[in-house]
Length: 164
Image 1 (cartoon, rainbow, N blue to C red):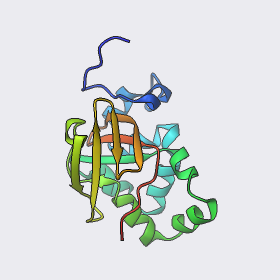
Image 2: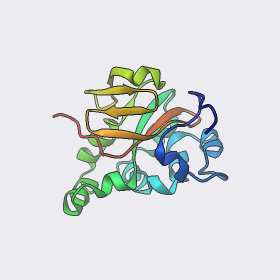
Image 3: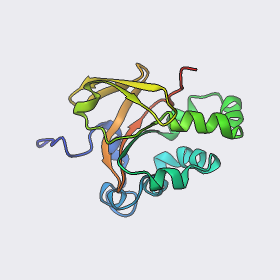
Image 4: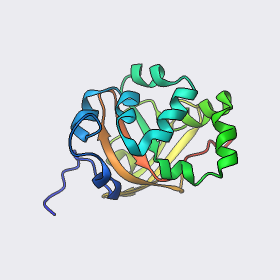
């Protein structure tokens, strides 16, 4: 228990984040977002995808962004053949990954009823309140408001797909 401050990460999956070290919340706060994610074991598939798409520098050098970060379990929901195909199609992979990035820092309050332009150029929508948020009516935020040096991260349980 105890009181939860909205400045703290929240959500059921936050308990799986390491308490100490580079992959902990304190450690991630010191690193730019792609580096921070690479220290979090639950985001290893995402990190592989970001590397394959050549987006590491783009994400690390961006200022004040929000990243919706799908967990390994989120990627595991995609049939393996489909996922392998996407991971080997740089253009498609880039499109999907940049759809998970919004060009400003979003607070939990922003997510209550939001529609935001992504780097992919189409909009991502968010709904919810308190500690329960949904992105594009499909992905649940399982650990939100994670800070990195240049981004706010919301870890989600489903990979978002651009409309087009």
